[in-house]
Image (tube, rainbow, N blue to C red; front, side, top):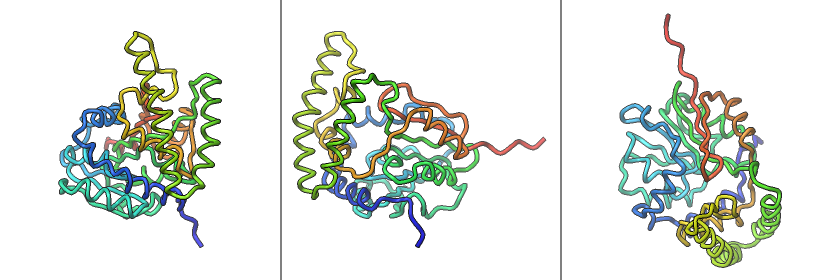
Length: 284
């Protein structure tokens, strides 16, 4: 039997996540617009052709697609979770240029070299073979087309104590991820309210007092809503499969997948990177 590049328990977890935290209140929210800009800050919008055709790989609830779709001609929204696709259909009901596919990254039903752009945010670190996932996305691109990816960072630029805190939380994650859904939800709601919220607010106070909170845990959430914290706490602690990569590892995987002109965002969240499939050589 052929093995698929998918972890069924993780797909099921995300289906429950997007059914519970469906993001339908966020499209017009100012903070959501800010989050979108953080992820897409390095994306070369100005190089896309008119009526560009692209794909959101691992679209989840459609929270990014709802902002990408108005800028392009056609957007293929792809997710391995049927529950997530149902939520995305509802959230994107007003976008007539979205096409939905229930498929994992290794069996995307699109022709090779058919897309003007592609992006996958916070998805490919949740599959068994991230390198193969990147390669599958790149294969869909036309020559010269960009691919934007966000992968969890390996805390490569963080001090030892920061990495130590993360190792402790990862032990907690492995335990919570084994629990039934309602237990996972209850525990992650508590974590969001008693850890994410107060620590994030402390980071906001540090910033208001003129200090830099960037090296403090959860500083990225200092201007985010509790709803986002609840969603991400579930994402962080209830997901069975999680991998993390250094900047150098991500760069190497992208190059091995055939991308060039690779650039990384120097701002949170880490790491966002964009690269291009090589353009065809010009005739002499």
